[in-house]
Structures are given as structure tokens and as C-alpha cells.
Image 1 (cartoon, rainbow, N blue to C red):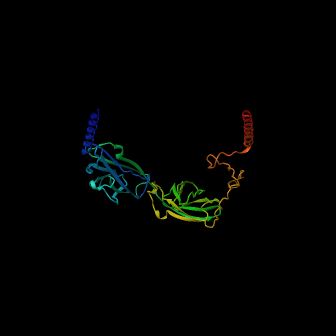
Image 2 (image 1 turned 60 degrees about the vertical axis):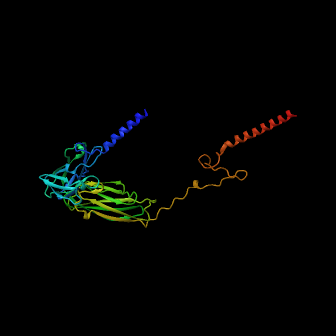
Image 3 (image 1 turned 90 degrees about the vertical axis):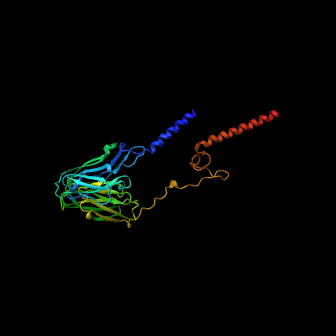
Length: 373
């Protein structure tokens, strides 16, 4: 029986060793995929969208390896009103445009981005004359020639963006007042055009903890997130018009900001605002998007430290006969002291019981002496 088991294990080892050195073939299944694309829901006229198309594939055999790059093709549809140009940065090959289709092919096995993918930097420009409201459909596809592809859903990206009017927004801060119990200021938000905006966003960014502001302006709502207040203004604002948001930050008597200076950055985002992973995709003019203020609280007296409560002060512990201190309340199990304390009315019964035991013992001793006599 033992010999049979050894023979079986040896045979399985030989099969695995043979599979490990067997080279992959083109007929083997292929794992392929495209990198994530974060596309704005809206494009402004004249906006240049800089993206990197990433693609890669490996065989799914016992000895998985990158697919021959000559078998890979990446295609991107270019909708009407959009023009293409090669982008900056490392490229894994070359791209050619024919009518409304951009075709990119890897240059060779050594042109990857270091993690097995082939990058293709691309710049797409939205025409300045493209009518507002135009729908821009995009389709990105990766094709593996002669491959039994296992990840077909991951080989195609489809999305649609809309051409929207742009508004260059600017921000300023005025009427900053530091009082004993609050900091107040006004954020002035201006539309420099060229289009009317119906919604825009601005943030108050700070490094202290919980610099929560209250108060809003017409059509504005604000919410607090980690490290910033996010405010959205939903109202029509034509070029040349501005709106104000008056803010109040309470300063409680026990606030740890007292005696310090608090710096706050205020930033407005051009309209339309498209966010991706914390950064803006679609700025019109970033030069007037940011300002800041410093709330000087050095003149505010910090709150005094709370005095200890009377119950926290230890009272003298009465001494027991013989000079030994009595156990303090709470000592015993879990209190770090000796035995359980004896308190209250329990002392009387215990004393009587001890006296009864002494009398009984004395009686028993007398009876024993009489018997001996």
C-alpha cells in the first residue's frame, strides 16, 4: 500500500513538472483588459481632454505569459466635433486615425508601462463651434487576434458626454470678523462668463479638526466632509453676476483653536464641474479659482482647565485597631486591595456571631475538664 502511494505521488509530480515547462500556445485562453477611463459627463466648448488608453493581455495556460503584442489592437471611436492629437508621455506604440476611428498598436514586447500594459497617450479637443447639448458617444475596444478571450466584457468601454456651456467662476473673501464666540466671513462668487451657469461648487479646505461653518446664501447647500466643507450653489448666474454666501464658524469657550491661527483655503470650480478622484477634470480658467483667509484667534483666551471634582479628592482613611488602615471603598476584587470590605449593618451580626462562638467554646472546655476530673 505504501509503495502504491509513493508511485501515485511521483506520477503526479512528473505531470505537474511537465505542465510547468510546456510553452503557451496562441490557442490557449487569453486574459485581456483595458485600463479604467474616467470621462466627464459634460465637456465645455474648446476643452482639451488628455487621457491615456491602457491595454494588455496574458495567456491563461500553465505557464502564463504576455500575449504577443502583434496580436493586440486598440480602437477608439472619435465622434463628430472632436479632433485627435498624440498626447505627451511614454507611449507603448503608435495610433492612426481613419475617418472617425482611432487605431493603436503596441510597438513590441519592451514597450509596456512596467506592469504589463501598453499605454497610448491621447488628446481629444472639443470643437469651439460644437453646438451646446451635442451628445458625444465614445467606444473603446481591445481586440486579441486569434485568442479565446475569457474577459470579453472587460474589453470594451462605452460612454457618452454632452457639450455644455462654460462659466469661468471666481471667488473672493470679505468681511472677515473674529469675535469671542465665532468667526464670520462672506464668500463672494462671481461668474466671468461666457455662459450662464445654473450650478457650481466651492470648497472650504482646512487642516484643523471640525472647522464647521453654518449659514448659506441663495440656492446654496453645504455639507462637511473630512478636511473640508463642500458647498453647492444651484441658481442661475449670468456673466457679470455674483452671489454671496455668509458663513459663521462657532468658537466654543473650550475650543482648542483659541490662542492659535487657523488658515482656510477657499476654492470655486468652474462650471460645469467634473470631479474624479479629488481633482478637477474640466477647468475653464484656474487663475481666479482660489483664495484663502487666516482667522487670528491668538487674542482669544483659552478656556481654563477644568478643576477636579470634590469626589475625585481622596479623603483620609480611618485606621483600624493596631494602626492598620481600613480598606478604602472599592478595594478588593478588581480594586487591587486585600479582601472584601465589611461595611454597614453587617458588622453587628458578625460581632454577635463571634461572641456566641466564644461562649460555646468556653462551655465545651468546662464540660471537658469536669469529665477528666
